[in-house]
Image (cartoon, rainbow, N blue to C red):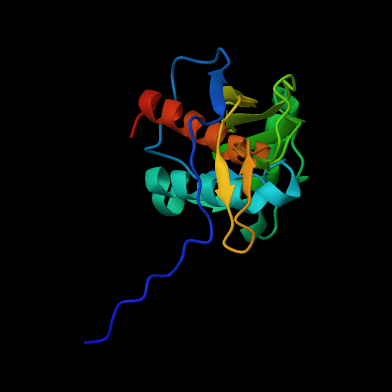
Length: 208
């Protein structure tokens, strides 16, 4: 019988705590939407480019579960006569233009921003007096193009605060211990988390 060989550990992490993150939902409508009818169009998300693919995939996955084939993505539809950038809280004139230019019944508009990005996902040798934070915000609006009304609008802000974390990182080559390695939720991950919380709230208040 061959003897078992043990592979030495290259990295050893010991954590006593983790970063502190929170999400705040801004006051919005208490009612959701009616998912049972109409053709829906998702606009191109107005967000940082490196986050767009992930946020778009999350959004399409959510709405397809609720709408099936009645949801379309703006970049997959030909012949639309509208601009890709639609500002939040549009007036009736703009909503009529969206109706005339798309022919859809409902329009989904999402804007996401990085409000603060003070530190990376992993940081070494923390200064305990450094109180920076990462912060992202996501706003989702749904427009009824037939009535030319905003029927749902909600904003969620996600924040990750610096918090002291004691840890050790041991390497096989040097056997050196590095103290105070801290993992944080990045601004990009905060965007995803904020978006998912909007979906959760919308799900609870909507008709299916």
